[in-house]
Amino acid sequence: MKTAPPILTTALDRLIGQAIQRAGGWLPFDRFMALALYAPGMGYYANASRKFGHMPSSGSDFVTAPELTPLFGQALAVQVDEALKKTGTDEVWEFGAGSGALALQLLDTLGDRIARYRIVDLSGSLRARQQETLAGHAAKVEWLSELPATMRGVVVGNEVLDAMPVQLLARVGGRWFERGVVAGAQGGWAWEDRPTLLRPPLDIEGEHDYLTEIHPQAQAFVATLADRLTQGAAFLIDYGFPESEYYHPQRHMGTVMCHQSHQADGDPLVAVGAKDITAHVDFTGIALAAQDAGLSVLGYASQGRFLINCGLLGLSDQASVQQRALAAHLVHEHEMGELFKVIALGAGEAWEPLGFAEGDRSHTL
Image 1 (cartoon, rainbow, N blue to C red):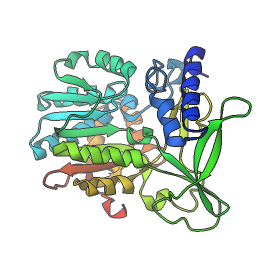
Image 2: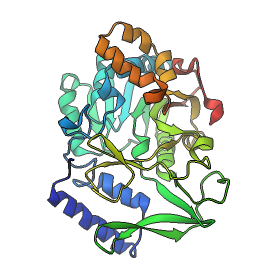
Image 3: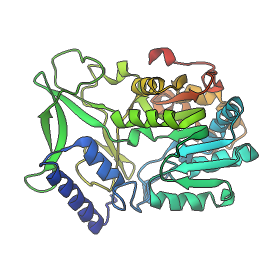
Image 4: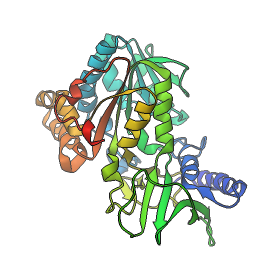
């Protein structure tokens, strides 16, 4: 199994230990997760380890839809093209562009429809890989580390929200606690709960112990996007649920998950910096944050239905047998088709994107 170089792990552990000490011996999980993923040069998304790929033999940890097949980006391009026309814009903004695979697919497919492709990514190591991937479109691509004061265009974000730090809430013996991280008695890190006034957005029925997450950072991100996007639309694709499912009484173990060498585990306190840490998205919270900040919810659907509406099946018919098989993973319910969702947000006059022509679930949010 792939591990981070010892000096990297030691440096990150030292940084986390200092943060815990400064915080009085206890660090909320969202701050721990932020350091584990984004500490400059040391966190998982900030270090040089390979992350995206088909197989563990490549040294990668997981595969995303654009890495799986270019048909994903080609289908999404149909929606992006419509959105550019509807909003009267010619720029695409991508958050967390990963290896650059999705950017390449959109640029290759849309050509002159895109005047400028702007990537907002905090990772210097990923930026270098993106620059290599997108060398053929170098004249159009620009990288930013933060949002400008205003922006116009179509925003895309694939598996971005799930990597935003979350706070952990635990109901134990009928009382609510925030779960944080402390130094372990035998080294490493350990959990510790502290009483809190924080609560999930829904009352959780029953008296059983219950672990879940709340998502202030993802909601703040959407609010900031709303503040800056003066004209355009955003399409955010990720795994998650509306809050009625997210905070269902039976979902009592939370959704935090780690990924390393194409294996999943539920312990973010080990191999820190060497593996991804994610949580499912509360799409109701995202929709409400967007509406509160002035954006319209243009649609919400499963990834499978969205891609079919965008013509994925027709694109697959023209592809190789191997590519058709890979595309099936994107839409089948037992693969990515149902767990992954797409939410569209609009700045300006509301309209109905073609990706939600059938199977729109906005009423479930």
